[in-house]
Length: 183
Image 1 (spheres, rainbow, N blue to C red):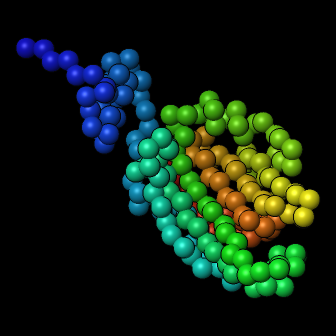
Image 2 (image 1 turned 180 degrees about the horizontal axis):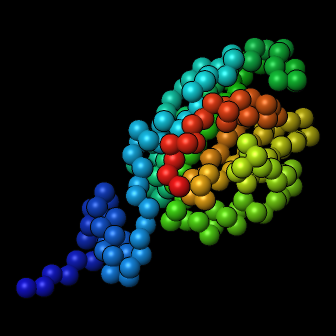
């Protein structure tokens, strides 16, 4: 007896079976997926001074995203103070830190890392990982900053900040545990 099941017949959580079957038939060996706990174990172990940790989100459950995790931090700047700019009202600023497994999307990821746009520069994180820094300036001052890099030619790490403060992003990077990521 022979059964044929098309990809469209799978429920959303089972669509990976079609890809797994195609890989097995073609001899492609994909790296083993990490669990939510393994992704979370890589995220920063510190909370930046003055910030509060908001949430950890696993992107595996979000359609169209590579598996991974993200954490965010928030800080309130009161009216008249904050980040090198005088505030005219109370404002929250945010930091986002994410890790994603780009093994199924490596061509695009590598291309994006090598392309240096306006306000970006190539950097080597911890003297090992290729990446880039971004500092976005606006007519009213600084818009935001960010760092993106690749670990073990598979995991994209991205950090962004509503302020032009790369130092706090590097503090977070220093508290991340990349040793637990598979090679």
